[in-house]
Image 1: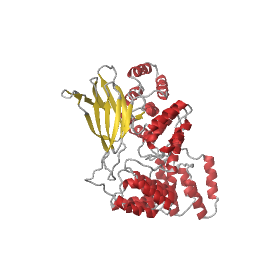
Image 2: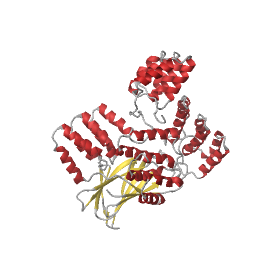
Image 3: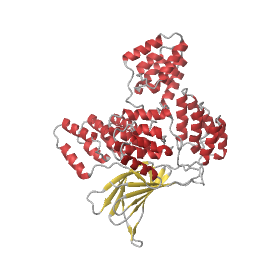
Image 4: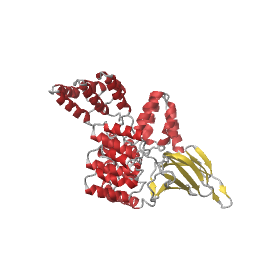
Length: 538
């Protein structure tokens, strides 16, 4: 694989941000040895302009934000070289391929479209959003939902709308964090001084004014909340292998919605057990760091002076030539040897053992196409599903991983999709982290008896509210039902059923919870809550 160099253009832009979601990639090919380029399985032949004796640039339009594959077919090489690149919303990309096959990338920020300003959210949509946030009784949940709204690049607000959302949160520090986060989405920045009314502290008002005066529409200086970070950290901590940890943390750092303090990033990098992966992740984290003046603190995670020097050089040269460190897939010749070795093994058990060992080897990386060939050496769907999960962290073109789904039935495909979502480093997920374990029977019985013996409806309700707010308590639907039935008021049961949902380990059975409610309106309200629920910040 060729080394890719990424040049980040730090240009100042106006606040009228484009609502585009696709990028244009221009590929400039040098020399006569590079014959064709393949982008996401589409081939582009390199043609020479004989008048200028240069190759005609290849323009690939409308690429969605995310990871893409790039393959270079060369005249004097038996096997073509391949790598991946990432496009981001708000940037076009120029790729230069030198005569020797080395690759460089340069991002260009979109210029604001002054002919068409973005539109603030409609009154109806805003009211629905505001009500959904207001209906959350946990302050942490409100904070998460408002933060997610401001981070959603499809949402824009007037200053007045943003103020109303921020005022749903009571903490001064949280309000200050949200005022900065909101500025990206404001359609009337000339009125933004009205936002200072939500802050009591003069120092916060002055700091917000400084933030606005130096704002760059392509960046964020707001680190994620402690609750959201803790969710990411716990998920990374639970990964069972070094490969899965590194893959999850890598995806977290490259997610352009995520920003971290050095202190937060250090905690994630420290989860990697070896120096090589710590250095690798420390470099990857640099994009997302909001207090780069403290980045030298990352050196304390590295033992060798050589590694520290390499990280310091990387950080000091990041703005001008930022290398993208990409994992290298197995060479075709080595892959063919591995494939034939497994193919020639006798018996399903021997094949499964060899495939499991290959996917567990930390320095083996595969393209999706290679992994698919290996997995198809076994025929049982359950075995294929097990192997597809095992190989995910070793895939270098994860954007193409859906190509494996045609090997599976509907239910297995859904299970694999859930697995992939939970490994992509984004705490906002449509399904819970399924490694949660419900409370043991003995612990649950003890807790149940404690609440049952608590005197008074108010005291019982208070204790149950505390239990379902405890992030370390998880329950089956059957367990949660027993607890909720300790109170008799319909409104209290509805409130507790909502609060319990984030702690449920078998949400597929949650429809059984409706039995604790008498009225159809309460059941409808609970159903609506479940259908719009997000697990972020839990």
